[in-house]
Length: 126
Image (cartoon, rainbow, N blue to C red; front, side):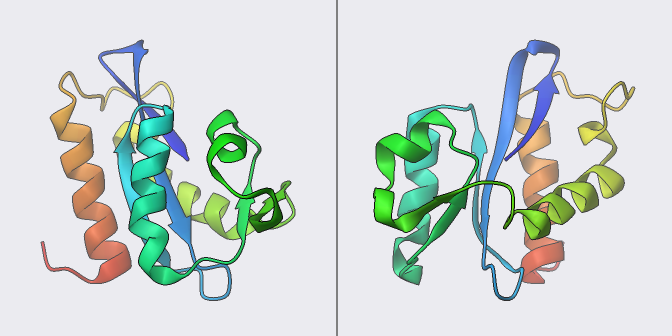
């Protein structure tokens, strides 16, 4: 997950995304608060892929909504997703801390990040 702020730090937005560990490709993503219902949206999007294992950071909704035998907790398998976060921070100014490129509306970060992910990861023309 990657966080950004809308207007102030009290209004956080999170990019929830899942990647294929073998290829590094994004399988699905959701933008929203750090809440269980947003995690469940991502989980529903991943259902058609037949995911057999999830590498997580052990945040609350992971343990509440994933089968323990499908979950691997730790940092050892998160290098590819952290690289994705670096690419996002490098290419989208509003994701960098202490930047002047911030958003005042909830819709703009979702639109900008959605366009970037769809173009960069899925090859959708913008």
